[in-house]
Image (cartoon, rainbow, N blue to C red):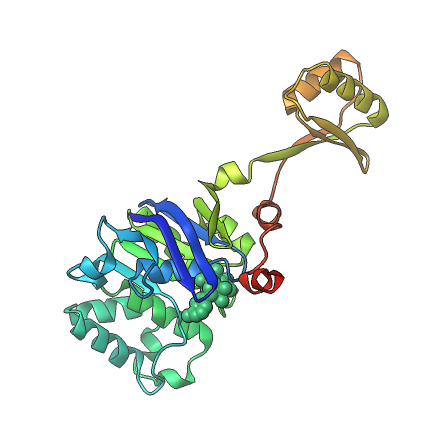
Length: 308
Ligand SMILES: Nc1ncnc2c1ncn2[C@@H]1O[C@H](COP(=O)(O)OP(=O)(O)OP(=O)(O)O)[C@@H](O)[C@H]1O
């Protein structure tokens, strides 16, 4: 479990994180979203004790990172995959981290295999692609077999095969009961990977919600050869209070986009008016659509400062 409480972090005049509160629970993948400069990396760095907040706190398993006796065994993180000495090999790099954290050598071999780097374990990292460096960074995060994991943009630079691998890895780690916090700008990928979302903008919380609640039914598409008649009947039903306030009927191609009525209500109404209906499809909003709507008012910090 990660608990972020009233966290505020400033860099000079920039408020990177502004009174942010959320919890990341075990057993599920929590996606961490927000526009560039929203404060995601700063929040993750605060959780890992790398940035010190002006106020508030970030706790892992109920403790501040610097109070954890064997941090690597409790929390693992991939923040910046580029920050590795090129002269080392994966085996050398991970063995060095393992030794300085009292983690056994068997774990080194096991994580190298887990991330698919066994074939290059003795090659110099300098020649590695970004995708291979991401895998190495993930191996380092997993080294202590921690229950809490943070990944900042792990999909960066990976090919489609690697992207799928990350998705399965994240879901597998959550299924083992671990707490997984994952940031990414790839909405379609996040939609497939995360169970829960924390969305921030300008350092503040915009949403803390289950994925299925955020991408729930948006509208119902109804196709009919008598779309105009059906539209009239549906509009009457909406205006006489059959549905919640705010229902709409909008022409779309050979049919109608209906909000505020469910497929059963629409089907029953069409039958009562003897209007033929050839399709009734409830449509979900994509994460991208919902995310863009939620964040449309929050520009990055640079433009906010320039506004002042
Ligand atoms: N070390 C620093 N010194 C000064 N300003 C910083 C520093 N680190 C972050 N910031 C600023 O704090 C704000 C939040 O940055 P942060 O990197 O946390 O955002 P982010 O959500 O991770 O963005 P991105 O999606 O672009 O990675 C930005 O305005 C950034 O410029």
